[in-house]
Structure formats: structure tokens, C-alpha cells
Length: 328
Image (tube, rainbow, N blue to C red; front, top):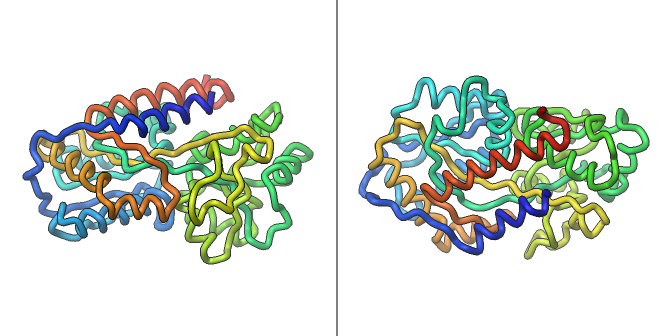
């Protein structure tokens, strides 16, 4: 089932589905990107890298302000946009599989995916499971053996809420390894991957579940070691040394798409322009270099195609969540 979910991502990427914008003349007066978590996580990375690249390419003529609005696994930011920023033409918000997961599970009270406009994707990010660099754990199977022997002895930290995408990734791995009651896996939620890694380094938890882009900086600094990438095969370049779960006998795959939504009341002119700008960014050599440097896989969707993709993702995650007992 998880393999089928990944094939959906890959198929969409191969097809290179894109939505052509009708009007790209709009230029935001005060461009702003909300990262629905504390600094250091994947949403923060998405806002800052996209904002910088948009300006470098001349697609926006002012520096994009990045606002970190943590809380509720993205729910605080979602409610802010729906209730207070609904008609803003200058605002985009970082989103991912974690956003779709929370929407699928009804975790944003009173909110649905149809209350915002889904702009575009900027790639996909494979999940990782990591431990502190000085940990005695050296493989995914060693970690899962400890969990299987005594679930209370291992705490796994992630940047999404309980039942969120980071949580689901470690449950997918546990289930694939034969841990029958994955609800016993001890997961601790933090507001963003950066905070989760901080707790790992402090010794408060034994493992971290997140995405490769948010883990990379901590790997480069020598703070953590990746014991499994949830990809079908090893990634290229500087990520080639990271073992996959599959090669360790754990058939677990998890790809986290990254993209943006905009306020539901954004004008058609502004929406079409943002769709076009993100599409141009995605096609640029500059963004291809960002993707390569951060282990991101292709996922090229804009406008209506992205809207459809998110809708299908929400439905798919609802099925996954029911299967592992997160929702009824």
C-alpha cells in the first residue's frame, strides 16, 4: 500500500504534469511565506529556499518575509490563513504530506482542504530515521529490535503531531518489520524537525523521524546519523552513503511532497501568477541544484493538477490511517 503511494509520486513526477498560468504579470507588494513550524524544519526550509530562489530569478522583486507560525502540526497557521488572511494576495504557505495527513485525519477542527487554494509542488522529500551520532544504534533493524523487545525503552521524536506524517513513517517501518501492534511505538511530537533533533541531541529521545532535507544540516554538522532512508533505492550524490530501509529487509517507503497553498480568497490574477512563478522556479537550473543538494525527488505539479493531487493524497492517507488504527 505504501509502495503504491510512492508510485503515485513517481508517476506524477515522470509525467511532469503542470498547470499553465493565465496571467503572470502580478507582482506581490510584500511577499510573505508562512512556515507552520519553528525554524529548522522542513516547512522553514521550503519557505526560505523558495523565497531566496524566487528573488534570485527575478520572479519577485522584494525579499520574501518568512514567518514561523508553529502550533497544532500546522493547524495554527491554517486557521490563521482561513480566518484572518483569507483575502491576502501576497501570501503563500509551506505545505507537505504532513499537511495532507492532518487534513485527512480531521486534525484541523472545522477546516478542510477546500478552504484554501493549492498552488504548486516543488519536489518530494524522502523520509529518514536517524539517531544521535554517538548512539550505539547503527541500523534500522537494531532500533526496531529494541522497540519489538520493549516498546517503552525507545522514544522516537518527530516534527508532526501524533498521527501526523512523521509519526506515520515510523509506524510504517515498524509494521513492515513485523511489529504487530504499532500503537505501542512511543512517538513524541514536537513543533518542527529542528526541535525534534534538539531533543535527540539532548538525550531525551533515542531516535528521530523526519525528512532528508531537514536532517541534512544535522548530518553535515556531525550531530546525527541516518540509519534508514525510506526510498525505493539509494539516493544519488552525497546521500548515496545512507542505507535504505529496504536493503535492511524492511520494506518501508515514505515520500513527503513539498509545496504551497494560498488563501482561499486570493484573486484569480494573483493565484495564476503565483502558480506561474512557482512553475518557473521549479523548471530553473537554480532549483534543480537546490533539489540535488537536499536529496529532493522530482514532483512537478501546478494549479489544478496540484489541487487534484492533494485531494487524492488526503483520501489515500485516510485509508492508511484507518489501516493502522489512527482513525476509525
